[in-house]
Length: 261
Image 1 (tube, rainbow, N blue to C red):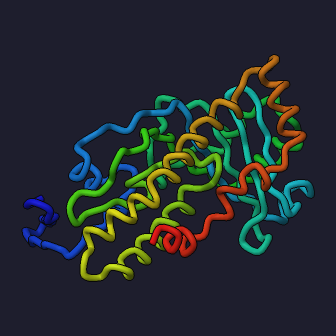
Image 2 (cartoon, rainbow, N blue to C red; image 1 turned 30 degrees about the vertical axis):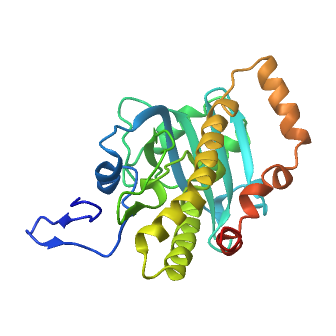
C-alpha cells in the first residue's frame, strides 16, 4: 500500500495501481494478508470427503428429492441428487488424518472412505460403495474479521470469511458479497473507498454469524452417544429447518442495500 492506494506487483515485474482491488483469492488469500496482516489458518481436525454416485448405481433412498443427513460420533454424511438427477452428490466429514491437506484436488481411496463409516447402516455403506474416487481435504478454521477493507482494497468470499460447509453457505455468501459490492459501487462510482466501506458494513456481521453457526454445527453433528446426542436427535426430529434457518435464505442483497441508504 502507498497510503490508501493498493499496489500490485506481479512475478513478471509489472506494477499496477488499480482503482479498486477485490481480493477473492480464497482461504490462503495474499490480499487478506496485505489488508489485515499475516495470520495462519487453524487446522480444524476435520476432513471432508466428496464423491459422486451415478444415479443408476445409487440405492432408491438416495435418489429421493431431499437432502439426507446421517450423523454419528465424530462423523456425518450428507447426500442429495444433482446434475438433473444423473448423480447423487455425497459429502462426508470425519477426523482429519496426518495425510489430509487443504486442497480441492487431493483425493482419497474409496476404501479410506468406507473405513470411516464401517459399522454404519448397511444402506449407507451400499451408497458409498457405488461412489467414484472421492476427493478429500482438511477443513481450515479462521475467526471472523473485525474489518476487511484497507484504502481502496477489500475482500470477498473465502478470503474474507471462510466457513465450514455445514450450512452449504461458502459459495452462497461469495455470491451475496458480489451482489452487494456491485450495488454499492454502482451507487457511488466517484467514491470507491466509501462504497467499499458501505459494502463491508453491510456484509461483515451477517457473514460472521454464518461462520459462527457453521462452526457450532461441527460440534453438534459429531456428539458422542449419550444424553446430549439424544437431546439433539429429539430436537432435529421436531425442527422445521426452513423456518429455523429462514434468516439465511430470505436475504435479498437489493433490499439490504436500499435499506441502508
